[in-house]
Length: 535
Image (cartoon, rainbow, N blue to C red):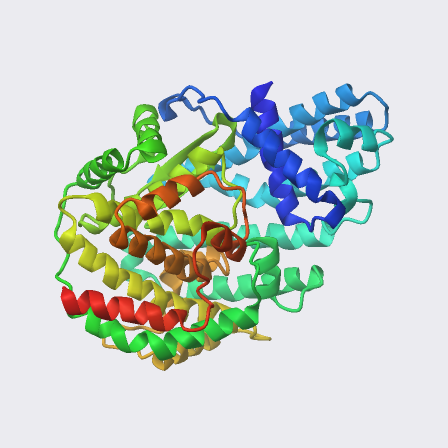
């Protein structure tokens, strides 16, 4: 029963973030947060990854469970309705858990046709499953037991945001299914590009054309949702950003004017990375986690005990590291795409920060801006406590400056590519080059086709801005740690189980400064200047 309740409460909390919560429903959100904390006090036994069996989700069964809940919602037996809700959520959880398992196993070997098919199946069917969730809550909102359901479990006013008129109509689902198909197409094209023969004959126009089609369908999605732009839609629907596109645009201009001049100067002081064995990064993380202790050390121990990571190497792995939460097992999982250099230490620390956040909160519900604070903050903290990290720290500081500057270019590219009315491959190449020239980053290694190698443009649109603002907050944690050892670490540990999804609100609660604050970019520039002057 606890498993059902934890899953249900976590998902309902997530729903409160996706849909506007009326003022009268704020008490419901607080109630759900309290319930979530109450149900997650005890540490669950670790389920080894090796024992997690993949079974393709049964969409017919999921639809049948939904139909049954909707039928029960017409009656007046509250317990009977909730039992049906728990059953539905169990199957709903499994769909996304199976999706994550398929993603992990396909990413480990992009030539495996079985996992390619399973990954595509889950990706393409995600919009339809999300629509089922909306249908469930719409049915509960119209139940004669609505008030009893709210009073007994959901909280007063929870269903005020639901009703017969759902934005999840057939047009939206069709568009999102098309988007999912294009994302699956991207994975196939990426595999072809990175194969030996593909690298000889591949033409980037194929991947570029896929992005053109994604821009078109995503702009249609935004229009279907009544949004003025895809950027505004993504900010609200996916990222819970409590600032607007105008704030973002001004910030990106500030980065260009303030930090770009330091970019090349910093990299001139950084030595080339050393080669390392695949297990070196894991050993580095183990030492750092032991030094930090507390929740961080406990999460690392669970990760090792359950084998909840994949840091193998191979020629056909997806060239991107990530972390996912396996909801049905209530466990995170870390996937590392090794570079074979000491940079792997930063890469694994980054994903382990996400792991800790998910582990401490039983599946984090925060927005991406907040989530990335934990990943980038973990990079800094490992460097602060590891005895052999001085040279890597120099690299990290240059890399942090690059996060501001390079991700600013990517973010500008995303902002402007979705403003193209009839985009073409030539338009994207020209726009990409124009922006990088404006930021002074066109050199002998630059190619106007480089954007096809950035997975986020395809799989996680408008995500990259999160790296920039969260990097600023992570840098503040590092500065706190330098001023008073342990101060930044304590704040990090206290915040791991946060239920605050919004970035600026989280910063205020944590006592951190907004990256948009007047003079903040100048402070950042001075921090980098002082570091490299002393290095």
